[in-house]
Image (cartoon, rainbow, N blue to C red; front, side, top):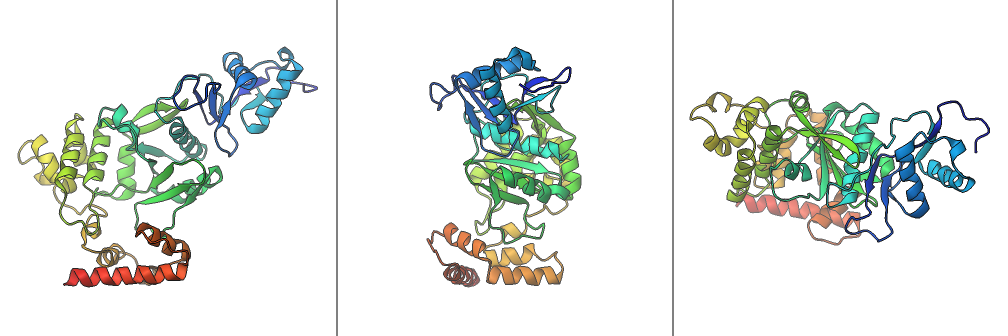
Length: 384
């Protein structure tokens, strides 16, 4: 026990997220509390004495050191080393309640909590989009997505990406690195099994990135995942964003698929006020066809002008034309650098491109030549 403990100090349970998993599917019978420490690490599952003591802290913190036994003090010291307990009068990451998982994947839920905590610790505004929040808001029936999507302050995307690296993610190979041409940065997990997509904008809106983000942030709804409050777009806003994602053009795909359009209409029809929100966000040009049945005839005409971001270049029949259009707004020095990078990309981009094309190439040089041949072949085929 510490030789001298200041008045008011006691043991406090802390975490970046915590879940009661005693009856959760997929866990061993002795699993009790799933926690994410405040120090960069993976999730920890508390069992037995450790779990019982941590639960006691939740009910009694700050727990006076004089009330714990030497054996309990040893356990608390170990928890403190993990970043799950602290001897203090208070703590911003204190856990004062414990609930079962909201999502069917407890680890997925902890990722939401972690990203929210990391962003908040740096004062980075962010809103979580798509994923299970759509189901919780009644906007779709399917629960899960394969990753965690968030839209953060466009000026601070790189800062958040760097802040998440110590927690077990690294940036996916990115041919657009150093530019804002691509709308998102994808983070690949080392252990978590859940990718994170950090958006700087949402394709399909006509507003500039900062204005669109500010409008979405002002119209949010709270959800609580793993004991941490996160923000998601309010239902009408979320319906518009989900509809845009559903109909987002895919290079080489041609016309909008009927299934994508039907999915977008379903999102919009499920949320009151989606037409008004689409007009405010500048989504009418991209969603004119899907919004039509929900709007008063002629009411969308005044909002139908403008070019949706990331729409025109994604509609191109091949990647050569698409990428050329995408970089057209960049100054020539940047364009030349990007052209060189696409013709002869870095090792990680070349190898990732080979994997995406279904080639198991272990040689970056060979992967580059294969990529170049694919690009020329696709371009020539489209010209015919």
